[in-house]
Length: 398
Ligand SMILES: *Cc1c(COP(=O)(O)O)cnc(C)c1O
Image (spheres, rainbow, N blue to C red):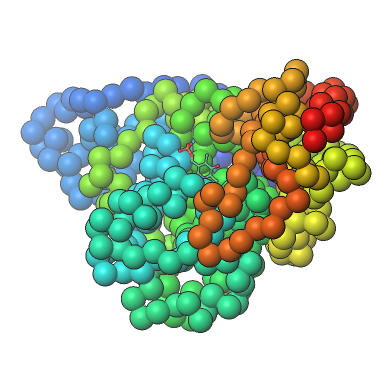
């Protein structure tokens, strides 16, 4: 709301106030939806001034944004202490693509964790490979050992912590240190933790990526992505994104801003309910292991304890034996969990996941099939009762 705060701001205060500049809100609490393609000028001279090199935060043409997009981008920058700027995208995957393309060129080498989000893997082995960019996958728990993998043409290391499906928590500080020593750019998919639980730029990350579709939007009704850049990385990101023609719609950004205002309090509830359910699951005989970063059974748990300020609402559990039919019976009868992709909304979801299908350099030896849960904002006792019945259905078919 004010550009120069005199009183310190905590995370909850920042998600409420960030990005609400008077010139954008016009005094309305939420920055309104400013829709535009054409901007009209009074004179040719005005038109020429507006089209100058630095069109940042100046109305010029709809593709360059309006106050609705700038407001959300600014808010996300403010949530990452030390960041220079943020660019918004029509999806999380679009954000990952722009971030990688702003760094990589033909002949470059990219390091990706074996636990990366499947569409990120496909981008690397598809689009990037066609462009002459090679990708090597690494064990997400490699830590400082990443130094041995850095080659002369390694341009970027992407991290995703915790990783998709299996929630391996990476040693981000060790990987960042190894990358910095060799002048390699670091990118982090920070969707699970958000800047509230892991301020990525403050941890030395160069490009911090969010699928805003998840916790920023928070209501399962908008696709949106963001990349927040450390100083020295924003101009390249913005130029690349403009050259790709990227623009997130003002209506979607407005919903993103609206979601952001409650993100801190929603995350607290997701955290508390998910922890309650994860601990309960860990005590059930049908469950072999709970893959939740805050539980000691999760790979990389020590890194979680050291680096994170909290945990969110998404985790997996491995069943004790059983096959596809028993897992399907567990999920199919759930009353409070929907069966569907994505996560981060107010509603709980359950998904059968098979992480080994998306791994190439690490092998899992799981005791049974795996289920991923997104814990929503329902009463945790209801969710536990639902899961207790689900485990009974599983046990009957195991
Ligand atoms: C969902 C997700 C994405 C992609 O976001 P979309 O908005 O669905 O494109 C990227 N990374 C992670 C970890 C995700 O879970």
